[in-house]
Length: 232
Image (cartoon, rainbow, N blue to C red; front, side, top):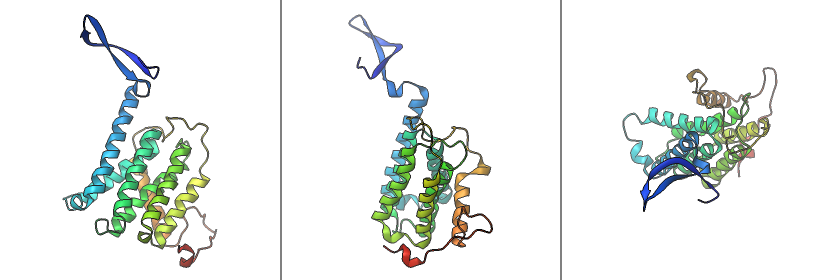
């Protein structure tokens, strides 16, 4: 066997009188790693499907609730999944938004709800005990940058404030001691519906729409940039 593989003590059969043993690559030699690979495949497949067929799928009954479930799955994958799973979730969201932002297949409400995934992930990086890897945080910024470069016209002033909020939150997030393969997200515990990160992101967006910075304490003030300062 190659040095990158480990023998699993299970006989698959016999060939010419010799036992044929299962060989599993060291990166997939536990149930958790195999489950992570299942999640990665699901996220990548979801991205390809919606990138190609969002227009038709959006016409199906119950689409809105299923879209919210999808956004929750992507957010949870970034916050709680391994680094590999988190990066797959970011890539999937990016591919969908790059393809459909600013088109009739993604109306403004759908677009703005989708951006909440990035806000929720950035806020999750600032929560106590977060172990979201540095590479994952960097990819969140890089992903938004790629979407903006491809679909700049889809961003209004509120969206630009959202983008800047994400960058600000990630820049101020506490550093993690390790940035290993398992450092994509959090504890892996079930998500509490009462503390849904997408709900947090919605509150951030609500504050922005009223001109309130999400991290300014009562009594403090923040200078608001004019709309011209966001122009490219």
